[in-house]
Image 1: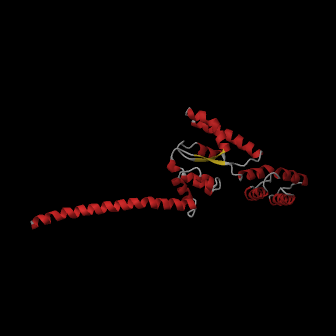
Image 2: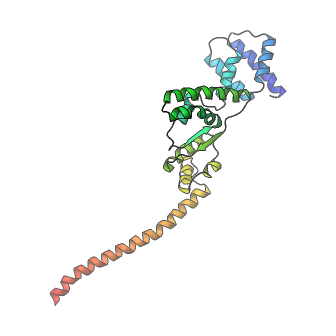
Image 3: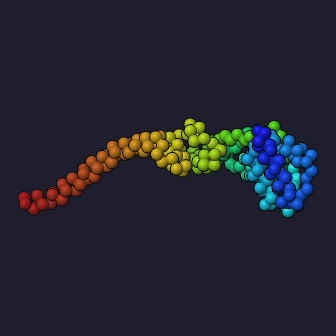
Length: 236
């Protein structure tokens, strides 16, 4: 934080403590400010606001840090396990920490120990995330493509919508049809690729339509020829 932000944080801490009925000595405020200085200023202010709204007791440093970390984008252990325990055919968007924690669970899953695998994953994930937060490492998201090609677009589009993945990076992972789906699902209906894809589909459809038309004409001619035969016989 800059010096001006540090001064603003001191004022915010003092005011929040007063609102919550907590009396903080100047030395305590300086220590808390120093511990919070490594976090983004806006994140700390948002955490202080949540403390005022959610806590009925005293203001503590642990309560502030907990709320700052909760906003860093790292999924909780249960959410992370729900993502990582999906079938292999599914496409999933995960963090590096989730992938690392899964290494502890895979042997147990292979043996059919689902409960043990979940516990091992959650323990490892909690430890790995705590270490990442201590080092101020932000989550990095990436895609693990499943075997089900038709199910790839939706999870990737959701990740793009929530800011976990960039659109252009995501498009580079997909087939033309999946790219078109992601662009439509994310509202990028005027993206150059989508316009070109639609045009190519129209051009491919035109010869098929023409062939169908010729076949239909041929069938009609055959029907007319069959009807004409009895009339000629009567005239004969």
